[in-house]
Length: 431
Picture 1 (cartoon, one colour):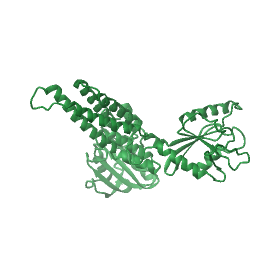
Picture 2 (cartoon, one colour; picture 1 turned 180 degrees about the vertical axis):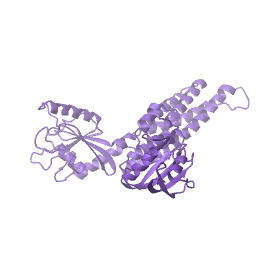
Picture 3 (cartoon, one colour; picture 1 turned 90 degrees about the vertical axis):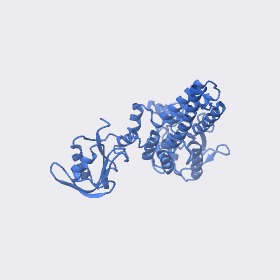
């Protein structure tokens, strides 16, 4: 695989569909388009063409052809597209002919986007936003991903880079030319004020929830002893029979995870094995051990057992979840009593979960970062914070250089191949 290869792939959804978009990117895109259609349409104008096999002259389809000369394209390279009928046989036939073209190969997952990154059409933060957009299933996920893919973080980083470069220029002037009359000496206090303001701004961003939580969803773990109503509550929350409900103790043996959106917010509900001191068999004991591990990973724990017997966690919410049951035991005042069977109290529980989620998810339209980006911003924060107590211009200059270097790594100007492989490998083939 070479970055100089011309690549092709289906860039629309899997057939059958009304329309299928086949995209070709690279130096041979124009030749390939001409080989299959007999001509090249005007730039950026759709033209109706016959798509033929260059070897047999068999008609494959009537399609729209588009030609986009680089570098002002999605990938920064010459780009051609065929918008054909979306039947499986049509797509297979055209892909088969494309694969036989000299110097053309099928794209790897994420290769189109990776080329856009390599050719400066987007930076790494924007590419990560696009990845999140492809996985978005709720409106809040879509809005957050669009903000990142649209370059909100990238523009902010660019402003920080300009400021740090200006400060670095002042410091270098002080170091190199402080004895010359035409150079204004760097003012240490102003440098400290500027870097202090940047440290505060970045510190505020680092305190915000990470964007991974938007993709993964709020992890809500249901816990309690056998027959405490966990599976019944899970089914009511996700509005389907996701877990087996039975009066037999130990029915739930393993962890059951069910993603669902409530109020437009992504949640991952986790049903666990019933907890008891003496497990009936080895399999049930393994289930109980896994349940304890789930408590450690939970954002919210819904405890359906005896009051005060749940895990020692700030994430725990006591529930009296069998209000309709003859053996229902009341809990303290303020503990939510509900019945998944009758629906009583369920709306209150959903409202409570949405309220909890508001503290765990990035605020709408507020700039937030993922763990990778946060790591680089934390390093920038440390470097600019150190300047606040430093008087040696050599050390200040080095801290400014290291801060700029971390910002470069954040946007991908200084990234390792291993990290890029991991990111773009998560994209679909046509992206």
